Length: 247
Ligand code: BTN
Image 1: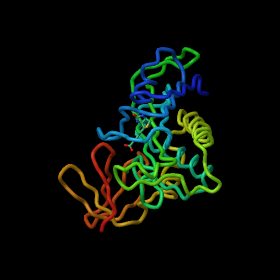
Image 2: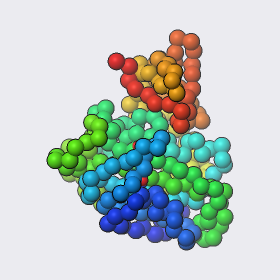
Image 3: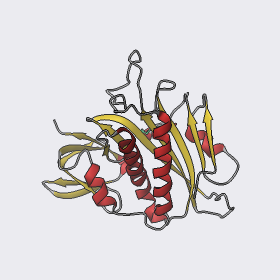
């Protein structure tokens, strides 16, 4: 599949809302200079000073079995990481489940939402449509306060343009999503481990009001986060938890 329409907007509430609202079938992508109500994971907002980053959403009708859908956002993370590393040559890593990290700070994030139904451009019905939202800090202005310590792509050598980054992301995403239909797990466990910022580290997993400490042992074949604790292996799933490196 290829992207059927790419729209660049000066301003929108959220590129993910915008692609959801488009009536025609097929793969629709949207970039914006500014979002007025950008959304992050777990009900958080996503802020990006106008023109300083990439805010991109892709609506993709999926031909994949429902039990594979838990792997989708991780495969998207690997694709976006690959695109960033290719263009910037920076050592970009992943923090489970959906953070793009540089030098231990957040460089970007991914929000994948699923809708039932949808149609490919050729009119073929699908069971699920993925709304893939990607936010990356490219050149955070020096005079703009950061909501938390963040990384951007300013140290890329040669400097990375947003156009080059978006082109690489769309190419990698296209390849990943094409493959996802037939091979959703595609060596995910080993590829994740290679780029996992937490791999082998002592971490604290917070699940509601409980905390678990252990060694981060990568991901399971179904995409869960694996923690090696004194009481044995525990696996966590994304909506439930947050993870930090132990002090
Ligand atoms: C996160 O780290 O919490 C995920 C952030 C995802 C932000 C992107 S920016 C483009 C798209 N539009 C949105 O409203 N959110 C996603």
